[in-house]
Image 1 (cartoon, one colour):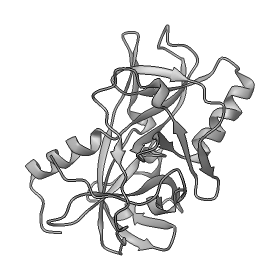
Image 2 (tube, rainbow, N blue to C red):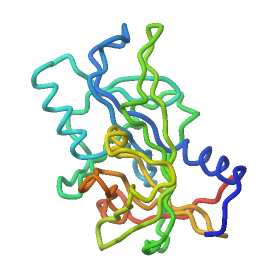
Image 3 (cartoon, one colour):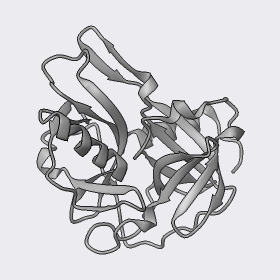
Length: 240
C-alpha cells in the first residue's frame, strides 16, 4: 500500500469507529468508581437478518465466571450512550475460534452514532502476508474513572499480516513503529479489524482474540464466522 496521508488515516479511523466500541462488566450504573471489573471490545455487524454484536468467546465465558460469584454483574456496552444487558445465551459461538455473537437489536433504542457493518453475498477477499490491517481497540490501561464517570480510551493500530492460514491471521507486534508491550493489548479482545488496500474499499477481515508468545497478535478471520443464518460473507464498504 502506498504511503497514506494523515487526512486519509483520519477518514478511515472515523469510518471504522462507527462499527466498534468497548464492552465491560459492571455492577451498577448508578455510580462509576470501582464498579467496572473488566473490559474488552466489540464489533457491530448487520447480516440483513439480524443486527449482531460480535466479541470474543473468552469475554463471554469470563463474564459467566464473574457473574457466578456476583449475580448482580451485567454486561455494559457503549453506543450513543452506555446501557447494560444480560444475555441468556449467544446467537452463535465457537470456543476454538474464540468468537461469539449476540442479537442486540432489541436494545438499540435511538442509537445513531454507531452503525452496523453491512454484510452481503459478495466474494470473500483473500488475506495475504504483507496485507495491511487497521483496527481500533479499547485497551484496559486507557480506562479511567474520574468525576463519577468511567471513560474508555481507544487506540488505533495499523499492522502488516505476518502469516495467515484458513482460520487465523497473525501480526508481529514487535515490528510496530511505536513500541507497545503485550500488556497494552489487554482489553482489545473482540475488536474488528479491516483490510486496507490501495484504491479499494476497506473490508472486514477478522476479530482480535489474543497475544501469542508475547509477540504476535492473533485474529480470527471473519470468514470463519457461522456461514448459515448468522453471517455469510465479507462485504465491501465504500468510504464516505
